[in-house]
Amino acid sequence: MKKYSRRLFLQQSITAAASFSPLLGILDALGQVEAAEINGRYKAIVCVLLEGGADVFNMIAPTNQSTYNDYRQVRGNIALPRNSLLGFAHANNNGNNPLAYGMRNNMTRMHQLFAANKLAIIANVGTLVEAVTAEDVLNGAPVPFELFAHNTQRAQWMFGNATGTVKEGWAGRASHAFYASGHPAAAYFNVNIADSNNILQMGGSAEAIHFSEAEISPNTMKTFGFGPMSGGGDLGSVYQALYQAKQNDTSRLMSALANKRIAELNRPIELANLFDNVESFNGFNSGVHEVGKSLGKQLELVAQILSVKDNFPGQPNRQIFFVNHHGWDTHDSDNEHQAGYLSDSLGAFQDAIDSMGLTSQITTFTISDFGRSLTSNGNGTDHGWGSHAFVMGGAVDGGDIYGSMPELRKDSPDAWFDRMVPTTSMEQYLASIVRWFGATEAELRSIFPNYSLFDSNGLGFMKA
Image 1 (tube, rainbow, N blue to C red):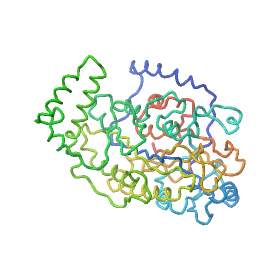
Image 2 (image 1 turned 120 degrees about the horizontal axis):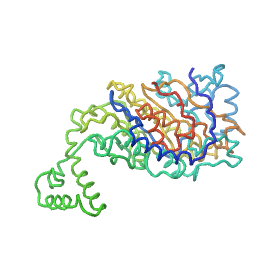
Image 3 (image 1 turned 180 degrees about the horizontal axis):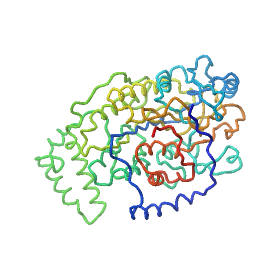
Image 4 (image 1 turned 30 degrees about the vertical axis):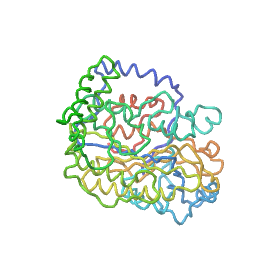
């Protein structure tokens, strides 16, 4: 079985990352930094935010009798029955005596994908400002700002940095590496499917394009004459004249506004034929008690867009999709419904990807605000820190757990009180995916400014 041993904890200051940026710029200017790989086959990554903080410790639980007893004791009334878990084995750090775990029994599709080596589990990953152990934290080592706050921790995951010094999404920064501003494909590199909380794609070469359905309707624009390419209309002519006159205005704010508005008005016309011959897919459902646009419908839309990817202007060869699955902040339950619905939705999405022959070209992965507390609050769990993540696709070296599984027991050496201290940083996790996507090591240090403070050898869950 594959394994990734607990990483070496590097004692480096945060200033080392900050001092690297100017050097990277100099090297880039001299042409000594390799560019991102965007040739060859199309690739896309699909980020699924489990908004609210997923209780992953009731999605993956130990099944060995002794470790299960520890888990049951610490989780109390919310512990899952041992005989209900969908079991699998994972080699421990010395490669012997496999440690047994199981998924909860309504995660059948994810369990099947794991068995088919199309799903990997990334253990105990989270936001860090430097590599620390639980003992380090107890002794005063630095932790991320507002560690247990939803909006702050969710933002740090989307910024790809926990120091509070970055205010641009990592997918936005990634766009600089793959497509320069003004490139025909730049406008379609970041694709937003979510209805809220998307700062992941903020900034970059071009603003993320948002889709709410697989349909483009330019008729309204044409009828009222909006946009310089749209034809007649008295009101439209006035707007066109105003915007065109202000495109090169001496006020940078006014010129930026005019150019942005012209691009917005032209886009529906430029994309009028995007969804010609769009494919339809089976198996997606809207779930029950879903808040906002359901995960299934969002992933179905991603699949539909992928089915017509070659219709985009400039034919982008790399795209990042953002999807938001609401409802994981469960202080009064243990995410049972969310876990089952996530499993069903991911299974339907992978089926769609496989049917299009894109199995090894699309990688789907999860992020979440944070993990949950080990102990029950009586009904559910409270805000935590370290969590597990899931990565899916044909390019994933699946069927295993990567990183160090924490000990789920009272007085765990991996816990700060009853919150797990991450043993893998979000930078290590995300960089492994973006490296497969085509970014160079120098670009990874630019996309994830704190990346150099952690072991950069890679976690090994993506195939070469």
